[in-house]
Length: 298
Length: 85
Image 1 (cartoon, rainbow over the protein chains, first blue to last red):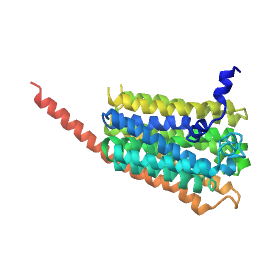
Image 2: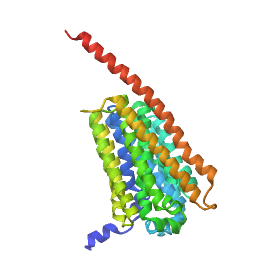
Image 3: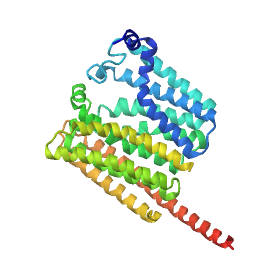
């Protein structure tokens, strides 16, 4: 490794604070906030900017508070043990204070520069993620990410409300698409990280229900998602471009899950296919929301 | 040639309803198979049924919205015919 490259990876307070917000996850949350704004109408640059800033801060605050609450299990899992708290680089109190501070700033930014409904919806997403998902569901039920998926589904409502000042049936569909996308997306990862979750005592579906039942449910959720993603076309929200995109993307996701199931049934290794399903599911959501925005402006 | 919207509506609803029934069936099977310590059946059942109720309400609203959309399209078609020379 070259000296500049090594220096670039050295821990620093700024780098740790950014890491607390989970910027890679937030990039998808921001896309699912901003794309619906272009579905809902033609937003001004200032509304886009303030919604983006407020959305980042709120999601970042939720992620930081999540790291505070999960500090006891993060130290047990290989995927999370290098985070700032378990590795000892930041104190738990600092992380909690940082999370609350930026979520408070987000509430003010959205309420002051966008509108009160946008601020309230973003705050509701924060509370749902922190209290309902992290504190309640995550450690008590194998259906944790089914219901917890609602936390990640708030961003389209936030984006929609920023432009229209209300929530309607079309925006509820964007919420439901993310809600029903979460199980096949997250369980693909949970199948691969079963040992980690088992060590930490988190009751993920593959650990409690078994691989076969989890993969079956991933398949049915993918079929449900395909049908659900087409329905907004029937009441005039989207046209043919979106319909074709939703069918193609949903078909690829379904095919991937089908391949995992077929391999599992034959007793063959399915880990590489499950990993590709996980990665494609991220692309699926991003491309579907981009297709929505394009379709509305064709 | 694209399918007419009523066909798209009912095909999509059929996919959603059948999948949701299969998910519930699978969840019940998984709950029965889980050990008693893991199975808090009442609350697990509530977790499974909650989203189904929301989804059912959204599907009813979708049917109403698609009916309204069809009437709007019909009126627009009639208006364009009456304007044409």
